[in-house]
Amino acid sequence: YSKGDNLVNVGVGIGGGFGTPIGLSFEHGFSDKISGGAYVAYASKTTPTGFGDFKYTYILTAARASYHFDFGVEKLDPYLGVILGYNIASAKWSGGGTMPTASGGGVIYGGHAGARYFLSEKIALFGEVGYGIGTLNAGLAFKF
Image (spheres, rainbow, N blue to C red):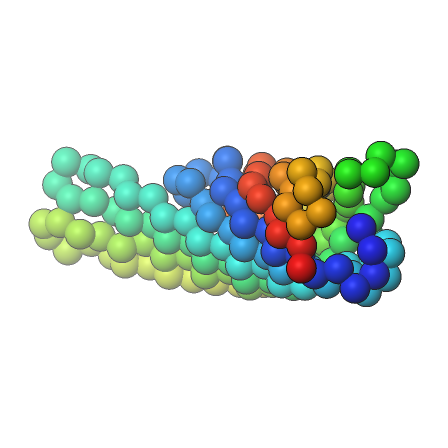
């Protein structure tokens, strides 16, 4: 990991109770240790009730910053970080009768721990635990 690196992470999440979340983040290396950028994620889940369905939707947008460690393993990029953002959640009914529809949102904050393992100079596998749209997020990272 180096100053000036730009990375895009594309991944899916596990946990959180909203189906299979999809997330996208961008990071820019402000130094060899500090990066910052943005995170956006979406998840949706439909729960059938026998009379109709409830559809739950969750959208998260956040700024993120990470501190990168160097353990002497050339292709490994471990990091710890924080996020600050806003989430939007909604529940909609489709079916017979009248059911309430609800939506809400609020400021969110949290932390994450993760690592990337570079398969080539430009492509890496990544995994993160912590706050996001899923408890565990994994996928591909692209450096440009």
